[in-house]
Length: 154
Image (cartoon, rainbow, N blue to C red; front, side, top):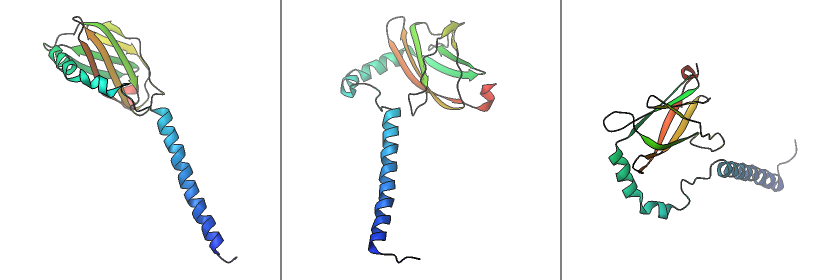
């Protein structure tokens, strides 16, 4: 066995720290490339109307209940009286909370006061971002969590 010299120790230390730095750079690159981390383009501008928008949305009294069963996403939207809410427009973004690569905007159809879409979702945690507009023009936005288990897959 060869003698361990200062050059060998220096090489081992530089190599170990080089691997650590390389892994950190790869992980940082992956984090930035899969999720931009932005909810809005300009947070200050969005904050100026946040409280008024929140009060108007709360005045609607809408509740959204997502469900998923055997390849079908359903969203029951009810008003303060528990009746189906009437929306001028209704859009949904379904995706993972940590990356944008699997984001999808399903084509929703309203059936009996419930919005439905055929959508294949894998097991795990999903984000459902609802963006709607009431008949009076009040915007409604809500982010919901949806957990898909093996039993939901059918």
